[in-house]
Amino acid sequence: MSASSGPEQTPVAGATPAEPDSVGLHDLPATVVYSGATADQSTAPDQPDEGTLAAGALLKHFRIVRLLGRGGMGDVYEAHDESLERTVAIKIIRAAGDISPADHARLIHEARSQARLNHPHVVQIYYVGLEPECPFLAMEIVRGTTLAERISQRVLTPREIVRISIQITEALRRAAEMGIVHADIKPGNILLDEAGIAKLSDFGLAQRNTAAGQRYVGLTGTPRYMAPELLTGGRNSIASDMYALGITLYELTLGRYPYSQTVTTMQEQLDLHRSADVEFPHHWPDDVPRGWKEVLARLLAKQPEQRYADYSQLHGDIRKLQPTARLPAAIVPRAEAWLIDMVLVLVVLGVSVLSEWALRFVHLGLSETVASGLAHFAANVIQAGVFFLLILAYGRFKTTPGKRLFQLSIADVHGLPCTPMRLMLRLPLALFPISLGIVLDFFDRLTVSLSLWLVGGGLVVSALWLVLNLSSMVIDKQRLALHDRLLGTRAVVDHAR
Image (cartoon, rainbow, N blue to C red):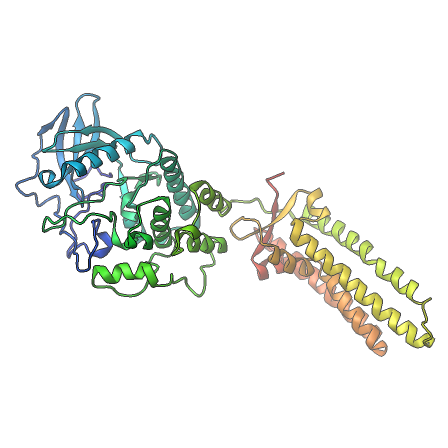
C-alpha cells in the first residue's frame, strides 16, 4: 500500500483508484476459465457507497482515518493502530458474505504466509482479522507510488530497472524459500516508496468473485500476466510467477506490453499467452545491456521448464547486468600497458622471422627465387595465424599482461564486462600498427616494387592513428580512444583486483 499526506488519491496495495473508463483487461485480477469476463468498475475514494466505513470507525484496535482506494480484493483504508501508535493500511475483503468457508480459510492462510515474510522488499502484514463477516488485514503503509504508475510517467534508467528487478527477485526468492507463491505479480502490485525502494504486495490474494457473484474456480491472477500453463489446468507455481515477472520486467524496460495484438475478450487475451510470440524491438535500446533481452526471453518462455529453475539463478543473472560506475583509466597507465602489450606481441610475432629464416634452407628442389617467395608467404601466414591466436586468447581470458600489470580492464558503456566477441574485435584496433603491419607485409611480399611506398604509407597512417587516438583520450572525460567510440567500450580501473 502506498499513501500520501494530502487528500489526493494515492496508490495502495490492492487498491485501484477510479479511472475515467473501465479498468480493462490489464487491471483485472480475477478467477477466469471462460471468454467474455469483464472487470469490475473501481469505486473512487471520494465516491463512497453505503458499505464504506466512516472515519473514526473502529476495527479491533485500528481506527479508520480515510478511504484510500478500492481494488479486486476490497476496500483499503488508512487507519491508526491505537495499540502501537502507528499508521497502517487496512484492507477489508469485499463481499465477505459471499466467500465460501474454504476460500475464507485460504485467504487467511495466505495472509498469514505473507505475514511470515519479514523482508525489506515485501509489504509487511501486521494483523489478520478473523471475523467471518468482515475479514481484514492490517499492513504496512507505503508512501509513494505503484510501479505501474511510475512506468506510465517516464522511462526508467537501466540502473533503476536492474535495481528494482533485483529487489523484487530477492523478495520472491525469500517467498519461494518459505513455499509461498505470489500468483499475481504485476506492476500494480509492486510499490515504490519515496526513496524508490520496491516492495511486493498482495501475495496470492487476487482471487475474487465476479461482478455477477459467480465463482470460477481454478485460475487465480490477472489475465494480462497469466502463464500459458495456467490456462490448461496447471497450478500456480514458481514457474508461473516467473512468467508474470517477465511481463512485468518487459513493461518496466520498454514501457509497453510484450504483445502488440489488440484484444477485446478474455479468450483473446489468454490466447496471446498460449501462442503469440514475444515482440522484442528490432533495434535494442543502446542504454540497456544486451544480456537483459536474454533474461526477459527466458522468463517469457512458453514452456515452464525453459524458464529459470529458481530465483537464485535469476538473481545471479540480473546482478551480472547491474550497471556499474567505473573509474576511467588514466592516460599514462593506459599508455604504459599498451606499450608493454605491443612489445610482447612483437616478440611473439618474431617467431615468423625465425620461421622464414628456417624455410630458406628447405629448397625442395625449387629455384632459390621460388623458395624464397614461398618462405616469405609461409612466414606471413604464420605471423597472421599467431596474431589470430593471440586475439582468441584475449577473448578467452579478457585481459593482457599490460592491463593485468596496471589493473586495467575493458568494460562496455554500462560498466559491465565486454563480450568475448567485442574484445576480439577491439584488440586488432587497439594494436592497429601491428595489424596494419601484418596486412602491409603481405602485400609487400606480393608487390616488391611498391615496398617503399607501403612502408612509408604504413608509418604515416600509424602515426596519424596514434595522434588521433591520443587526442580523443585527452579531450574526452571518459578517456575514450577511437576504437572505444567505434565499439562502445572503455578502459577502466579494474575494481575486482
